[in-house]
Image (cartoon, rainbow, N blue to C red; front, side, top):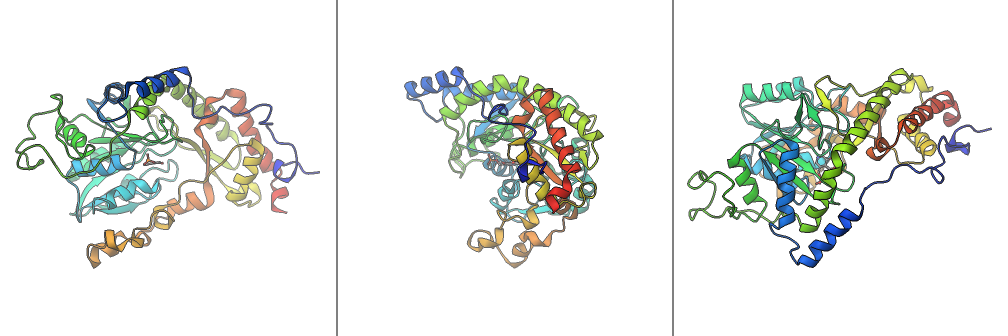
Length: 427
Ligand SMILES: Cc1ncc(COP(=O)(O)O)c(C=O)c1O
């Protein structure tokens, strides 16, 4: 008789009777806020909700400035533009990330240089960063992936020694803390995504954080068709600094603004985030302790300097040897059936990623033959990223971490159940 749910056995959880926590979370506060915006007739363009959110978000992150924008891809693009990075400049990016991290660099005509990650955090490997630096390198974009942090001490040290900018991609890390400092307050600019799957969300949206008033003013102008911000909040030094046109009021840019509806949701969602993050962090730590004791799986390494975690997904490593060589994709399918929830692999490494395909767009990216060759993703060797993606990665959505301790026990129970019965899947 089959034991595993994938073969018709009973699952560890009957989600019809006992569903997992749902996502997104909202209540009458969001409903009221949305109706208020609707009735106000101010649906976009530097509205009161956008300003309220920017102030609240800056305070939460512990940065002087926060500027919201349309999504967490254009925030990276605008960060690069504000730092003066463009044609032919090299930008170091981890090979394991959402394609938008690298695509943003492409979109300013820079060259994304893909480097490998650490096997136990899946975040950018500082040693690989150091090896990839050339005279054309201008910036590093560490990504704080899933439940891990890039080693910000090492990255900031490298950046200082080589005179490079650091843009933190915090799409997975809103509220996470490294040595007591929030992600997005350590590098020159922090970039955030508020897309639906993220743990602070308005469906779509993004934000940029910085402590530098000059950068803040540039970011603000760039997200608003290049208009010089009307506010007196920023530095007045930019005029004449070669940023705006001769008249001192405009720079070429596009519309990357957020709407008031998004900002209204974010204002409410941000109030819940600290508590949600604490619950997820507590459950994440507990899950790690359970995984630590299970054969065939490893929790991600939690650095002592990660004083608070914030999870987009909860990830762990799978070792098929302990599962009678059951391939990880089959494990994930069996795991999904046991839990009644979607289980993902990591992102595809960018050197083999179907959605990161710069060479499909010569009219946009073919500046000359040498640059064209340099942006070819297949030119980068990323053995650790590929092993993680092909053999080891298991990623659960963060909403499960909003559950309770028995929920976490159940997840561990499902893993062990599949291990004990792995021959059933293989046959
Ligand atoms: C690491 C990372 N960076 C950037 C982004 C881009 O964010 P958005 O989807 O808001 O453009 C994402 C989105 O998934 C992401 O995961």
